Amino acid sequence: MTGHEFAQQAMHTRASLETLFMLVVVGDMIGVPVLPPYYSLRVLPFVVPEIATWKRRVLREKHFTEDHDFDLHGV
Image 1 (cartoon, helix red, strand yellow):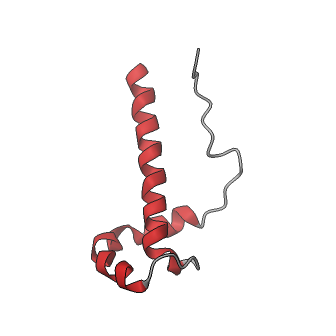
Image 2 (cartoon, helix red, strand yellow):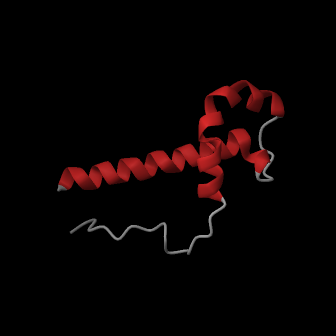
Protein backbone atom coordinates (compact mmCIF):
# COMPACT_ATOMS: atom_id res chain seq x y z
CA MET A 1 0.00 0.00 0.00
CA THR A 2 2.92 2.34 0.61
CA GLY A 3 4.17 1.79 -2.91
CA HIS A 4 0.77 2.76 -4.31
CA GLU A 5 0.96 6.19 -2.72
CA PHE A 6 4.45 6.71 -4.13
CA ALA A 7 3.26 5.66 -7.58
CA GLN A 8 0.27 8.02 -7.42
CA GLN A 9 2.51 10.91 -6.35
CA ALA A 10 4.94 10.15 -9.20
CA MET A 11 2.10 10.13 -11.73
CA HIS A 12 0.75 13.45 -10.44
CA THR A 13 4.22 14.99 -10.58
CA ARG A 14 4.76 13.74 -14.12
CA ALA A 15 1.37 15.09 -15.23
CA SER A 16 2.17 18.49 -13.73
CA LEU A 17 5.56 18.66 -15.45
CA GLU A 18 4.04 17.52 -18.75
CA THR A 19 1.38 20.21 -18.52
CA LEU A 20 4.04 22.83 -17.82
CA PHE A 21 6.17 21.62 -20.74
CA MET A 22 3.23 21.72 -23.13
CA LEU A 23 2.31 25.20 -21.90
CA VAL A 24 5.81 26.47 -22.59
CA VAL A 25 6.03 24.80 -25.99
CA VAL A 26 2.56 25.31 -27.48
CA GLY A 27 0.98 27.75 -25.05
CA ASP A 28 0.25 30.16 -27.88
CA MET A 29 -2.61 27.85 -28.88
CA ILE A 30 -4.51 28.96 -25.79
CA GLY A 31 -3.18 32.51 -25.76
CA VAL A 32 0.00 32.26 -23.68
CA PRO A 33 2.98 33.21 -25.87
CA VAL A 34 6.07 32.05 -23.99
CA LEU A 35 8.67 30.79 -26.48
CA PRO A 36 9.44 32.13 -29.93
CA PRO A 37 7.66 30.14 -32.64
CA TYR A 38 10.96 28.79 -33.99
CA TYR A 39 11.56 26.58 -30.97
CA SER A 40 7.93 25.53 -30.81
CA LEU A 41 8.07 24.41 -34.42
CA ARG A 42 11.20 22.35 -33.82
CA VAL A 43 9.54 20.23 -31.11
CA LEU A 44 6.08 20.24 -32.71
CA PRO A 45 6.43 16.78 -34.34
CA PHE A 46 7.04 15.26 -30.91
CA VAL A 47 4.04 16.85 -29.18
CA VAL A 48 1.39 16.67 -31.93
CA PRO A 49 -0.16 13.41 -30.66
CA GLU A 50 -0.71 14.91 -27.20
CA ILE A 51 -2.05 18.37 -28.13
CA ALA A 52 -5.75 17.46 -28.13
CA THR A 53 -5.70 15.81 -24.70
CA TRP A 54 -3.51 18.60 -23.29
CA LYS A 55 -5.91 21.32 -24.49
CA ARG A 56 -8.86 19.40 -23.03
CA ARG A 57 -7.09 18.99 -19.67
CA VAL A 58 -5.90 22.61 -19.42
CA LEU A 59 -9.08 24.32 -20.57
CA ARG A 60 -11.38 22.18 -18.38
CA GLU A 61 -13.17 23.98 -15.56
CA LYS A 62 -11.83 22.96 -12.18
CA HIS A 63 -12.80 23.53 -8.61
CA PHE A 64 -10.00 24.98 -6.48
CA THR A 65 -9.99 21.94 -4.16
CA GLU A 66 -9.84 19.41 -7.01
CA ASP A 67 -6.05 19.36 -7.31
CA HIS A 68 -5.35 18.68 -3.64
CA ASP A 69 -4.77 15.17 -2.38
CA PHE A 70 -5.97 14.14 1.02
CA ASP A 71 -3.24 11.61 1.79
CA LEU A 72 -2.08 10.52 5.20
CA HIS A 73 1.24 12.34 5.13
CA GLY A 74 3.01 12.35 8.44
CA VAL A 75 0.72 9.82 10.08
